Image (cartoon, rainbow, N blue to C red; front, side, top):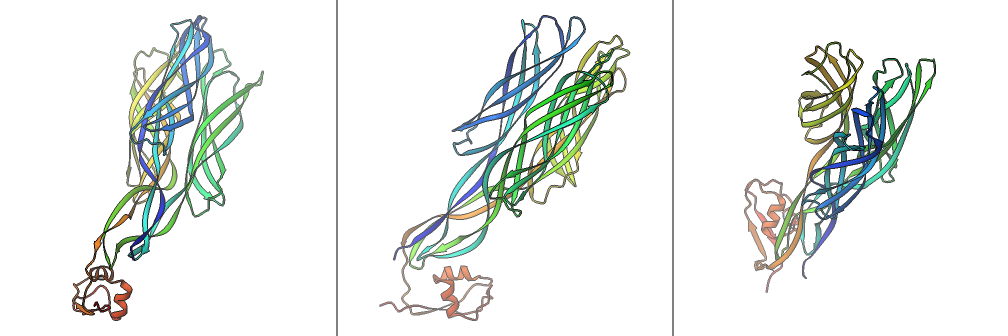
Length: 505
């Protein structure tokens, strides 16, 4: 009877690399440049709302919101806001129609152009992402007229990415009167994620910050920051507490309203943040696969393959402090620092150390200054930094990071030097490399020549195991043990192995 191998289809979520691209977003506003003496500050926040995957490329797009404040010819500080859609394309040979991508966007650079009749705003966006693919493999599990060496094997099964939304509304009291909210932003990050029964529970915090124009004779620019914790529960029918999960979050919209108590010397700020989450649950599933195979009647050609993939572990929240001294130029006597904004960072290298993560990168800040004559200016600072975060990466795990720059600070040490810093809030996504070895193909290459003797006696080699001996002698392990009940493996090499066969005519 011919051999009939049996295969089982397995789905493996496999990481296939990282991608990035830059996108320029330009917005022509309705704000007339007439009367704008100079732009003091500009900030922008972007999100990704659309992505479409094709062979060799991912089309992505979203919305960018600009906030600009400027000085008029009369010396008054005013602000304007504008928004526009943007679109970009990531190209890479690894991208197929089945590619799953996890993208994020950060604003790298902003500019304001007042040379035309209308204020024009532009930004350079960096879109980065990880690529995955659900690879289906067919693995041998047994079959007719085949003798297989079976082994219990663990695979990681993904139950797919699901999305959810969460909103926060908070009210704060500011101990002075606010004339204007010049710019604001909300930056969420995840500190932990776990599976419950039918749900994924995501813990994190959102950092709210705003540059405010004080309603006073000096009209100082002031910065306020609030950090709000959150816990979001996403419905996920397949989730169980024994599973692992991961989650990402981005701010979809942020609104703030200010109520000033006239004569009361304080203001009430109401902040509303709307966030979007993507979450995925995975489970360890045991399957029985064939490690090796042979036939007693036919010669086989066997093709084996090994698939490498990453299994998600935990999400770890940690932070690192940055504090650097930087040189200054063109600072007049009597200049004071009123606020710090425009915080951005680029992480050039993140690597594990004993008990932590060593981080090297570049920090960019805007220092809002006021000279002795009351003139507001901005000084843009960029400095390299090296710091460490207290974060223990589980043994044998790799990781990727997402981060938020929060709580920027600065101090004028002299007219030639400042001390600047910020907090890098990290979400560390750990993963463990897995290897799946399986038999993908079995074919018959010929017939075996049958033994003609009814009984054969063999002398084994020292250390030989049952499977290798049975395969070499061309009998099943069960038949080998029936005829040689006292065998103890591994063998000493001094045993005599008996094989009984049906007499051949």
